Length: 569
Image (cartoon, rainbow, N blue to C red; front, side):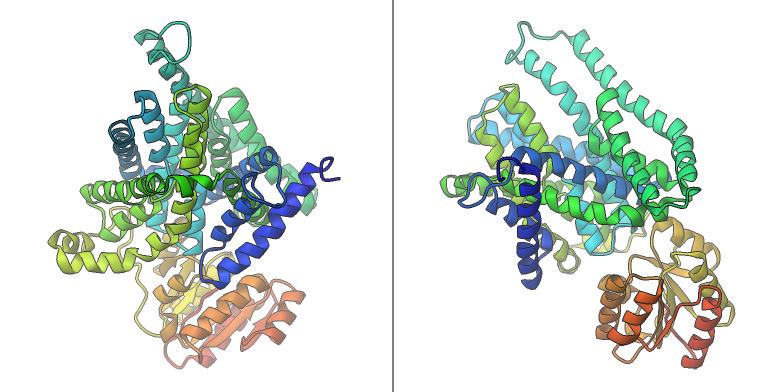
């Protein structure tokens, strides 16, 4: 059975051990993804015990990358991408160039590698993992913040650049005389570069001009059937199908194809439902991605070459971060933006493995480099949360000791269209506006004289709220930092609306820690959630009537708050 059902065996081993190690990591106050990496090491071919199918795991990991990139596309519109182009495009290109040079110099002069091997090594260190970044930003509720948009845009540019590099590696091997009967001439090289760029541009143009119309039209036809299952299937078919077409016809990476599928769908009215329906699949296959990374680690490299691994880790976590911080600061963005970008790039992931694998197949570098890259990748991914945790204290340290840091901290974000997005200091109403009901509630409370702050799910929603003269912060009510930014600790009432009981109970627990005596009002999405919130949580009032919810919420808030309030929907 073990041999005849490798797919089921791989799924069973991956999910069960990921659950166990992820739970242990969570209890130790570490991100669950650290546990997923150790689960992969446990079922990998280099450890004792049961072994999962590495080839199948890599295929499943690819699906995880596609779904995650599709998810970020659903939250990152073309307008957002263009909005950060002046920092993401020059920053990403310069950072990749400098990081590659660092890797090349180190490998060539310190380890005496060949020019080709040093170049592949430097390129593998230059690109960070978009998957890891998305998870890190999501855990902190910063995925849709301005800093989060810059970081994601930066890595999207890196992904596009890496696609070009992957296409150019074979002719580069010929130029260096490693493979092929004759070196490639300058004209042929330019033709190859032009052909690659033309394919990428053609795919993007097709998605923006044709896909923007066809995908919403197809979803509209499915919606008319009234079948939830068909809609979920249509969303997954769109994500994976577009990624496959991008790879097969345009020779663009699966990840980039799925990203633009999400970007196109984000422009339609089905974006929020598509995001909700695909979330479970994204989470499940993201686990498989991290398990697959762990399986590639040959742990002997840590014992036999510890200083080598440490040197690579320092290039990734210190060298790349310093370069990124310097570049963003040079472009005159605030200190917190430069430090956030620096923390975001202090890791490597999926494209690094792909670049290393292609370099090995072209005989530009030896196979031992893969274990070195994977070992440094796992360590950098595991330590990346520490980099994010250090952003705030390190920023304060820099401001205490350096004049340039104090000046940078005072800069306004160049992408901030509304300067007045900070909440009132005390007793405001905070509304997470994820639908028209919550938006109307916020407007009604504001017109009634209450100070209102909305927790918006993305930047575009926040800007729309600000046009109605409402203050807004971007994030999730399940994120402690977002709740703190909305001054929940000074609130007199909090209103949560339409949350699943898992997210709802999580939000309630964090709110109670910040403000034990706050009055919490909840609108449940269905009867099951209503009973759970009423019986299993400390909510003060649970409502479910869609038609009367705005009136009930407004009346309850007015009754509880003699002067100032907070609402987090």
